[in-house]
Length: 229
Image (tube, one colour):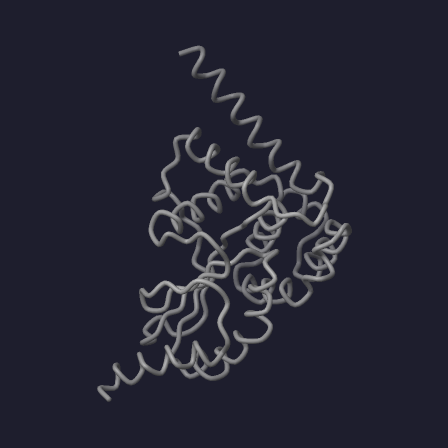
């Protein structure tokens, strides 16, 4: 029993240190997906948390009764995810979401420490502006995906209502970190997601960024079926 308690204490300290080092590690432009994925899996398993325990509020836009639902799994540092959000998503929003034909759901799938930290910040702003803040982060990716990540993210977070104190507290929120990890584990277990961006269109899993024409074709086929055409 004593060994178990000591083990859990050590694991807790390791988990807290992992949050602290999100920004203190020197940025070298290389992907840390493999190392961080190992850390994440250890944290979930060692803390005896189940992927079914994830309870993050869904970030979505559009009519909940829309005939088409697209779920995106994205990493905030992913350039292809940024391309989708700056080029394709605005067209989907204008042509389908705003017409009540499409519901769009965004789910985090962080591939590195900076992506995890940025996802945490997007969750710490008021929930009503989380999706808008995520779009802003993608639009300004070149500014904060750099050696000046802390400074630039603090500026953007301040515009979204987070004070410097809020910023620091957010990145030390162990419960939020655990929830984001579990959501990623659920995506892997339920849909075999292993890259970003990945999409689920009415249950159909699509890997990789696609042009607007691809999404339009998939959506129109579903709408035609829904209308009985």
